[in-house]
Image 1 (cartoon, one colour):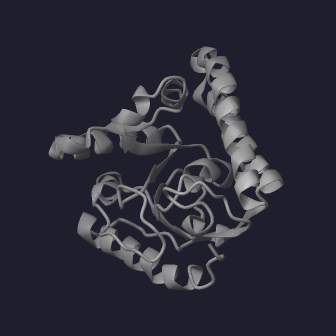
Image 2 (tube, rainbow, N blue to C red):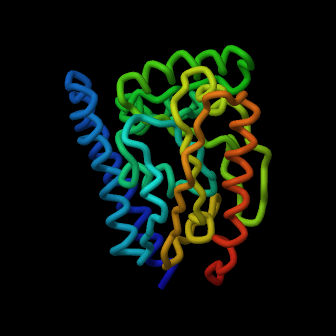
Length: 240
């Protein structure tokens, strides 16, 4: 039943995006908090449909580590799942992402409503400066910033050195870093069609205080904590 359930979910996801995105465009005139709640409703609906159609749920461990104010999330990146589910799990947020995503008709237009930090990955230092400048403004507005420091989705069991952009943002602004590990790729593979039943584990780590630390210190601490949790999270992968 996994192929059929996955097909049904994909159809629902695509059709709902085609309907929902144009409806959200007029929300650009609303305050961000209201706009975010409305636009992210699509993501919350997908999480609900994953549970209903694919029997894919999640649980969060370590919520007690979440700070009271805005923060920078440095997260493992394995799947499309976390880009959707994080909108239900964490406070109002935006993301550092590649600018090409903004060019996708309908989807990119709706994404722009959530004020992402859309960078040109080939811009080098200029991209880092953009992350600092726009990230500071988002954080000061109370918006959390989500960074996937691996830069791309990495398959379960694989590892890619974490980039330094999110760590530089923390070092320059003083906002706390929240490391997050999860095993979503074991259920929704990065290039796979099947959404396998089960429960994604999302583990929130202790906050990393950037004060007195270099960007490299922050990057290393976050990477060590995240990658240190992955063997446990990936120990019981569902059968393919």
